[in-house]
Image 1 (cartoon, rainbow, N blue to C red):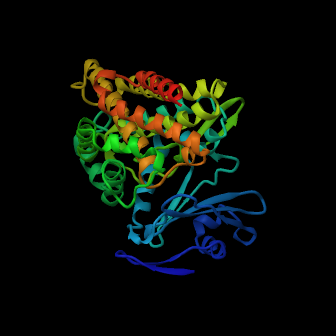
Image 2: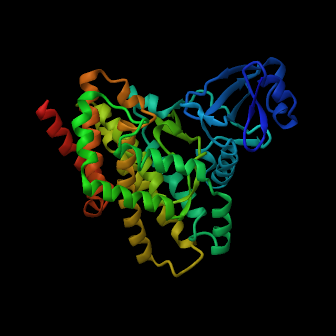
Image 3: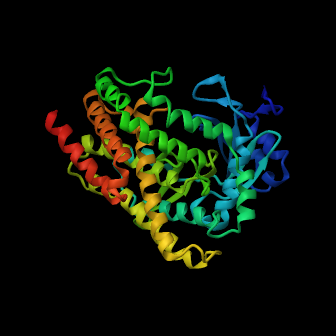
Length: 412
């Protein structure tokens, strides 16, 4: 076992060889699985943490997630507080109370070793991988809209008095993780930075983005909103790699994972993160699955997610605690959230093309298809950001992509 020193403490990192003894020493976890017959696999393919999937001889399982004191993607040169796992545990607890069917079961947190214990989702797979293969999971977009709406409503001024919201906002403060978003999503892609990378053929598109004064101004406004609009507890990193799916009776089922970037922020950011990642999947679909049923389905994900979000907000609205928030207020607020979602979605998509932490949707494409898909994503995202006020709603997002797609394919 390796010892790591942090500003908070020194703690030991788990390995596949030490997980069983760790579980055996924890009475709560030892009741969930038989540590003596445990099979353990380290599957942490993300950017930040160690993740261990465990299963005993009787088929019972558990997942352990341990926070590293640095960004795994970069290494020890980028230190990061392991206390982020405490934020994640709080988010899981809150979500489990309002949407238990959409998150893994939460078993507890070791605050000394920064280990989070939760349900092992046997038979589930990261949604991004399924999307990359052109697989359809009907209903998943709606489930995610339900997740965002219920988490947002239950932690906002709509459901709680202002003192409780202020207390929860303070408890959910997550400055180091928020700073990563502020830099990687809203700052670095628009300047020369060591974290950026892209294929040479994309350089003209990137140069056009960086020289676009209107775009830069709008991104600044979105960054300011991200940093100041403490509307509700949000997931903070809700992309298609933070969702696990499976099919049940012909319908998709979903579980939202990895809420360590959670904090009190703008509700539209979670929706935007999804919409931006749908755009990446849409770019891939346009060059690999053109004309297929999958292409039509993925084109409808943004509107499906939004419609479910709006429907759930309206369903919950009669239970609001302050009648100052009228039905007219809800209509106006939803319009603001929709505009935010388009803008944030554009920023999230651009970051994945230009900045750090690329995604397999685009990176696994052959060179010619990679260039076409990336170009579609950048141009669509640019329009979403700059014209989000005029576009008015998420339903317009698809129309923008279709226009961009036609232009890119025609010029190919």
